[in-house]
Amino acid sequence: MDELLAGRGRGVAGMAALQRSVVYPAGRHTASLIFLHGSGDTGQGARTWIKQILNQDMAFEHIKVIYPTAPARPYTPMKGATSTVWFDRYKISNDCPEHIESIDSMCQGLTDLINYETKNGIRKDRILIGGFSMGGGMAMHLAYRFHQDLAGVFALSSFLNKDSAVYEALKSNESVLPELFQCHGTADQLVLYSWGEETSKMLKSLGVSTSLRTFPNLNHELNRTEIEELKTWILKKLPIEAGKSNE
Image 1: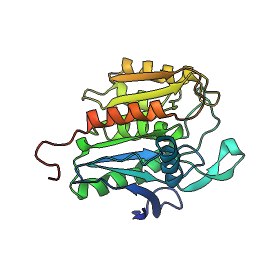
Image 2 (image 1 turned 135 degrees about the horizontal axis):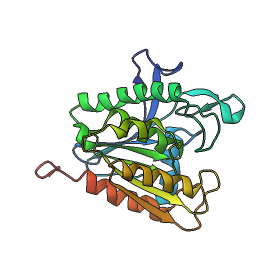
Image 3 (image 1 turned 180 degrees about the vertical axis):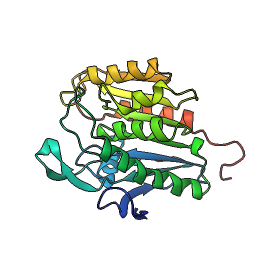
Image 4 (image 1 turned 90 degrees about the horizontal axis):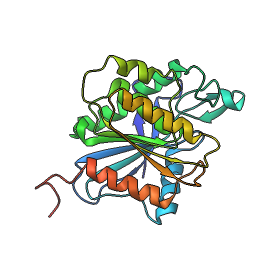
């Protein structure tokens, strides 16, 4: 089901209505998962991709799965052509400055999505956020800079730039941080495995509990084993609450 999430009139142009595709829980809704797609994709596209890999939706008894779509904006690596991206990049590299203005603007828009869930009775420690490629990078900014009380973060074929604002924010942090679940293919030619590995090491050194699953010969893509491992981790972080499942 596709829905429109009314914006709050802030952030980048075009964020007044954030489209999302939603997989509703089979039973009582007690937790939420936000999955952020990669650059140029859509929420529906990410959902369909995972559905093709699993031969069914990634669905749970108690967890609502939300696939939002990034607003279309000019994207510098595509010579300024319009694309559905969470933020702009100066180039696809871990060795350049972050486009922090567009990152922070989208953090505001995605905070509205988190707030929508909490207003509907879902505690923040029952919300996970993550994504594929750029979506995973966006999730790390959102959680580790602005929402350190979320249940966890996942990043699939993702990375942070070497001088990321995430690292700067965590240098002065003293609170318990959400656990990070990372997956990365060694054959990834777009987002190098070494970039994901460096991200994991940096976050671990700053107090994040991280786990990096390595997938030999996997390119910049998802596979069934990876999604099944992600589902296991999701259920570990968001178990069915005792006495609250549907009879």
